[in-house]
Image (cartoon, rainbow, N blue to C red; front, side, top):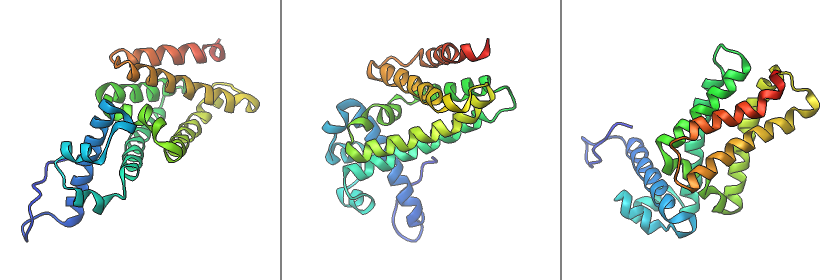
Length: 203
């Protein structure tokens, strides 16, 4: 996002632009703090101190920490899903589309590990609402991949199980590397795991 000077008065940006910039600052602050201290250890005060935003402004945008966290999670996952979907829609065979989409996701994790940690690690500690948001995101990726596995020859009886298994191994690899703060080789690892998981269908 382009930097916007948040000044008041007639010459300042429209209120919706100010709110968007403030939300973005809170988003990145929350990701950084939760990556360092975990969801449970993160407080609104921590986030505001890093974002340099007032408590009054925070509560004009969000009701509490959970509300801010869930908004940040959905924003990040919407962006990730859009990029993965584009990778899965290339004009190549289904196996390569799956690999492309998964590699895009892994590259995002490597490029922005704090945001990735918010989505893959800290969401697990965000209570029932976090679990529900994570399940919703997981199902979106499953639905995206099911037609591609169908193209690879999986039958109707096994496709749901196989797709969940595929999404599961990708999630596990991302979670493991983020937890150990070792994401440099994550794209290659995900690529290898997908190849191993899908190879039987290609023989």
